[in-house]
Every structure is written in C-alpha cells, then in structure tokens.
Length: 76
Image (cartoon, rainbow, N blue to C red):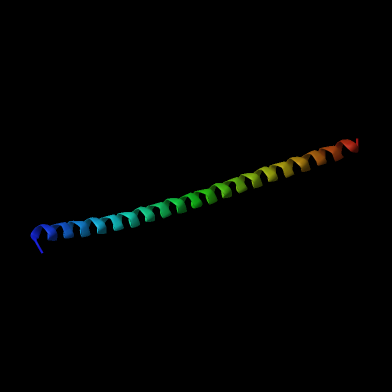
C-alpha cells in the first residue's frame, strides 16, 4: 500500500469519525433543547394555573361580599 493511499485512508477515517461524533453531539443538543421547551411549557401552565386560582379566589371573595351587601340591604 502506498503512502498516499494510507494518508487518504487515515483522513477518510478521521473525517468519518468526526462526522459521526458531530451528528451525535447535534442530536443531543436538539434533545436537550426540546426537553427545555417542555419544561418551559410546564412552568407556563403552572403559572397560568396559579393566576387562575388567584382570580377565582378574588371572584369568590367579591361574590361573597356582594351577597353580604344584598342581605344587609334586604333587611332594611
């Protein structure tokens, strides 16, 4: 085997190995990004759920206040 063919073989093996590792690295980055998106979505849903609970509590308190006012005006 000539020197030139050995060099070509080594270069092609190194390039192939580099491409394989590069593709796996990119796939791992993509998986991590997708997972972060899911985590972010869950955080947003949790925040909206907490906001809705606060609004519900406020509406419940206002409803109770209005009912109390109606009762107090009915007796007069």
